[in-house]
Length: 187
Image 1 (cartoon, rainbow, N blue to C red):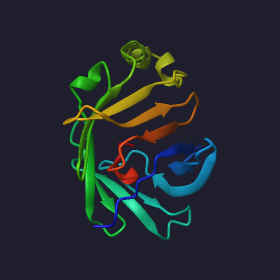
Image 2: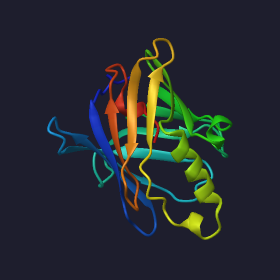
Image 3: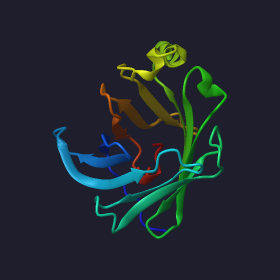
């Protein structure tokens, strides 16, 4: 297994394209500005069994890490995370039952087991209602929503994920626990 890659803060930004979802993971400098590119991924749309590889850049010549769904239908099956050499470095999964009203996740990496939920239960319910309204549900929801993850054993913060207002996916990730490898957090 490769050495853990601790990054205290980074962002995930979606590139807008017609045929595929493309994402960039970008380090955040101490002053809050964008730092260097950490990884790039192109996700196939409508894949039966999701598998995404992140590379050093958009030439896709050198992998950094990947994640792969455990089952074809991923309602709660989970995803395994692998380093560049294919060694397991963690896993994450959405808790399907709990997520009906307020999205909830579990993640695990060496030395870290954590649970995460949406910070604001009111926004969580509004998002669910919005998604079920015909036509309106097709319009991207402009709300900001956040997830907070805490260690199961200590209840201390592990990481926070904050969605920014945008038509495309844009998230800022702050990692409070230095044991957590940036490659093993939920996507």
